[in-house]
Image (cartoon, rainbow, N blue to C red; front, side, top):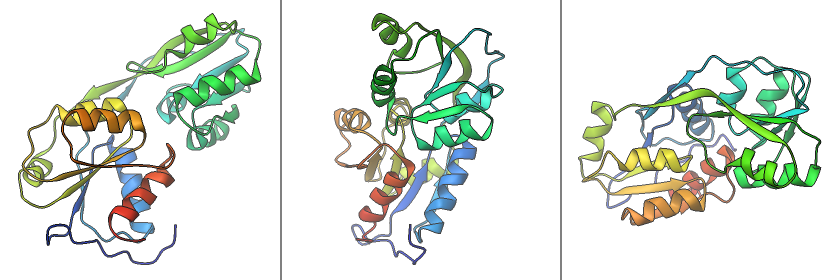
Length: 240
C-alpha cells in the first residue's frame, strides 16, 4: 500500500471512526498496517475475543497438517511436514517455524479444494480452533483423503469495552472490519447500535450475516486477505 496520507471521507458531515474487534495482537497489527497505508481516521480497538491455546501435540505418523488460521500455527511446534494453509499470511507463519507450507490463497473452501487437487496420501490432521467452519476433516475423509482434527486453541468471547460502546451509541459513522462469520455474529450480539455502522466484510458469508441483521451499508473485500480488507477500507474512506 502507498504510504500517502488518506484523509477520511466525511459521512453525514462527520469523519468516520474505524472499530477493530479482532484479538488484541491482530488488532494492533492491523491498525499499524492501516496507518502505514496512510489512513488518518480515528481507530478504536475493542477485542471481542481472546485466543487461549489448548495443550495439544502433533502425533507421529502424519503425512501433513491443515491450518485455517495463524492461531493454529502458533499453538503447536513446527515440523518438517507439508502444511496446507488457508492463505498466504498463515502459510508464511507456518514456514517460519519449519512447516513445508502450501497456501490455498483464500478461505476454508479454497483450502478444501487445494488439498483435493494435491491429493496427498493421509493421514492428515486439521489443527483448528474450538469454533471452525468448513468441516474439512469430514469432507476430506469422505473424498478419500484420511483426515482427522484436533482443537489447539479456544476463541473466548469478550464484551465491547466502554470506548467502543460510547462510539456505537453516538451519531458518527463507524467502520467495522469483520474477518470471519463468528466475529460478525459476536459483534452483532452487542446490538442495538445507534451509530450508523458500515460493515467491511472479508467474505460474502460475513456480508450475508450483516445483511440479515439489518446493517444497511456493507462493503465486501475483493478477496479474503488483509490486503484486500485494507483496500476496501481505503475505498470507503474515499482514497480512490
